Image (cartoon, rainbow, N blue to C red; front, top):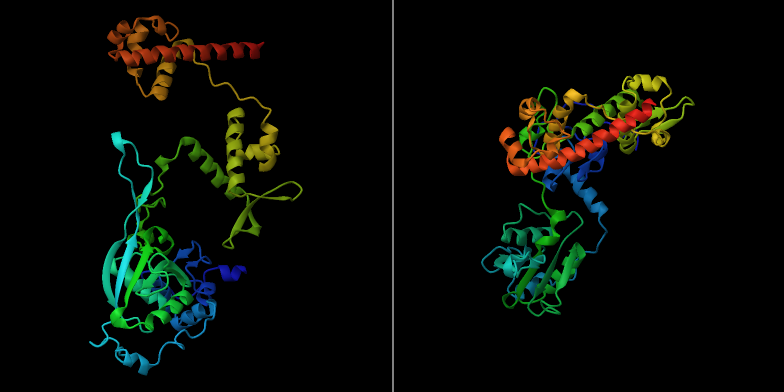
Length: 443
């Protein structure tokens, strides 16, 4: 596919409709499908009506879409050629000319819907073992089956259970359902599974050969197997209106809108570095899937290393590591010193040891210990620093102070003081280890 076909066509904007406010791509207009992937971002169509509306708004006849769908399907013979003639049908009491008249009330259809529910809790409130298939929910209706299509038949029995607005038949086949009638081979236990139009027309030919007054038709479909045929509900206008964004471009619609506060500080740092890397290394030679500029690291020998999502993430994590080691160097300084490509930098930095975190001074040890305790355990006793300092209670001797005495000083509960005892012992051990490493480094 060329880049010209990928790019959205330039032309007068089409009238807004329920599917998309953007004009479909020329490639999609020639080959309509459920997804228009030639525009950025891609657009998804939820029903045949939306596709026809898009074609109509773009000035393309929907007849071409119908012909295109017919051309995609496997040619099948005329399934009505062997159905009884009009004279034979009239002899059996079926009115072919006016099938909706009182003399042709249609066939009685029994429609069963099967679905799964969670099993009831066992004895003693034990969790259920899984989903349990329920007995079919049965409803009755009447349909005129003369020359009915498979898609219309599926829509009709779905409407019986008020499911026609939630599910739609497939373009070429599906959803599967079982069909049997009075006198059919195998009855219900051996009922034929209808998957394609051909399966339906073969069954319909034998069904219409039976006297209507003595023939009851039964249909059964499994709701658990129809997720692939679920109709995508159109989004409200606020969801596709660009004016629903804030000044900084953040989305405001949806139940799970990504927000900055939902990401950790490390993820935010990596994201900002990835954005800077993309701005630093654009590549017009290797384009992305939409025909726009890609991203490549170009070495001194003009070798291009494609920066995909995995490599950008690894590079950003490595930059954060290097920034911890060389705090005075920025991204540009690292590149100026011959920064390695993203595929080699991690293996070259692996032998380096992690730097020591800053060692608090003697006067700030209590403050650092209480802050770390609040962050690790969620118990904030930083307000008690002044009271503890007045009594010269430092982290190294706090574990030896009786619990009740510390409760009186800090007004904390016994459980919180016990947790403080345990935390201070570990904190002091780590502090002494850092001091020992610092002494060895200084030597």
